[in-house]
Length: 222
Image (tube, rainbow, N blue to C red):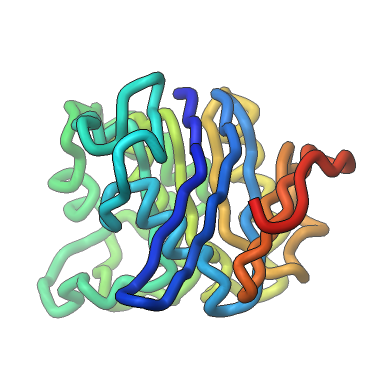
């Protein structure tokens, strides 16, 4: 999927969060988004996913305007927290995955993704018993079951200890090498683990910089 962002601006009421941001995300890119809290990282992602309404022409998916776009299963999204998930419902990991896919997936495919994420052994565990890191990986598997073109991760290692970060990011890199476009919000101290192709840095004063890995191509108020 080709994503073209043209002079994207967004505000909550009178408070501007994003100002005239322009960039292109090509199929197979690995885009890292970084910046301090409040710089607009999650707001940008919500614009991409259609949660935040934007004006016509600001975001295009394969030349289709975001206001007309309907193929949202082409995106896999894993948020930073799962506050809207009902943990009291007695589901095992396997049961959760079997009812979560909007597309037909085989049991073998679910098992393959669990193994890839290093959590094959928890398939029969209750969701309530999982650690934060295990739960995060389960939700990544759930996102992958719809076979998305783009996987969006909002600070995916927030609940993962340092020992497991390298394995986790290695797994994400494997997905990227298979052709998946990755958009990942990350803390600066995680950059060393990431084999990204582009990086977008967002600042609280509405300035941004967008770089190809090691080559700056745009900076300032866009």
